[in-house]
Structures are given as C-alpha cells and as structure tokens.
Image (cartoon, rainbow, N blue to C red; front, side, top):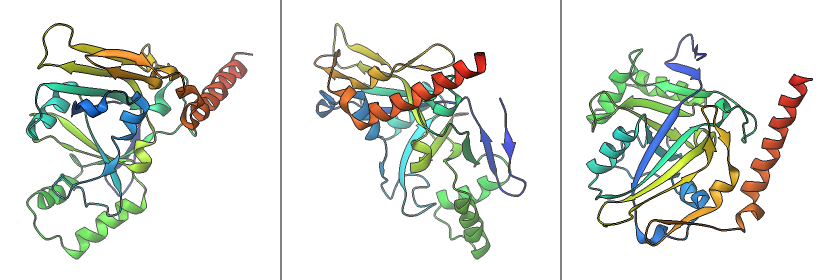
Length: 246
C-alpha cells in the first residue's frame, strides 16, 4: 500500500481500504434500489453526531473499519436486530475504476500525529483556542476526503467521517440485509463488485430488497445517469488496460 504523508499536517493519502456502515432497516427501504439506499448514506448531520461541525456546511457520511465496529456504532444509537450493512471501498483502488478521475483518499489522521488532542476537546465540548481553530481551517483548505478517529463503541475500532467529495470516491462491494426479528429466511445480499481487485458489477446497484429479505431488479436502473456515467468510466478503464497490454 502506497502512503503519502503531508509534511506539516496530519493528512495522509493512500488507497486499498474497506469501509462498513450499518443502518437499522426500515420497511420504507423496500423497493429502493441499492443506488438509492447508498445515496441516502450522505446527509446533513445531526448536531449530536461526533465531529459533525468540524468543517461547517458539509454533508457527511459515517463509516467504520469493520462490520463489527459498524454494528457496535449503530447499536450505540439504539438500533434493533434488523440491520442493513454496506461494504464499500475507495474506487480508485479498483483494477477497473468507475469514478473519474481515479484518486487516492486524503485522510485526516485523528488518531496519530497529535490531532487526537483537538478531537478530545471537541468531544468534551471544550472551547478551542484561536490557534486550534486556524489549524482546523488549514486542514479544511487541503480538501480532505474523510477523518479517521477512534470508535467509542468498540475498543480498537476505527471510524471514518466522510465529507461529500470523499463520499463520491466510494463504490460498493456488497449490501447485506439481516432481519434478526424474523424467523426462516431472513437474510439477503446484493453484490456490486467481485474478486480481490474489486471488479465492478454495475448492474448490482439496480437491485432492491422486497419483503421478506428477497432481492429483485429494477431494469430501469441502466437508464439512470449514474449507471451511464459509471459505465463510461468502466469502458475507459478497460481501454487503458488494453493499451498497456499492446
């Protein structure tokens, strides 16, 4: 894994990450395509969300380093047993990217390099000094994609707060549904990328869940702007591979 470190700020650039996010599944999610469900992961944050105001005026999306951390985080907020789990990766690390341009993630390291001291003050609702506020503004001007910080719900777990531009760099590997309150067949899964190099299955984004824990396909998805644009980038990526092999 290639890692670039900013000389002055706690920012790294790297790739080949997996990210996980859990939601409590609700009946209103039935019939929504995976694409629609994923878009709903980016939203205006609540004031009581951790670090939601570190950079004002941003839509945010919270992710974790493992399914276990993601489940612990959603359970902390009172979720029940019916869970929807998103597994995403940074699209630029795919052998066949579908987001252009293919870029590494710019991550604020809120665990090392001393920035965790400022995060602790934010957690404790302590006033920041003028120098600390200016330091945060310097980070913001570097246009980071996400902030990595320690999970409060799972010891050793890492959480990632994605800002909007970073969220746009994510693609899905799979979305899994588990309805723990139901007996019988209570699980279902949609695949959006395969193999260890994250080869995309773009049609996967057009699948949706129907009662109870079944998967169906909306054939109109391939007419959406999202599919058309991702398909263009996928074909461009294939062409670059063919050129390298000539």
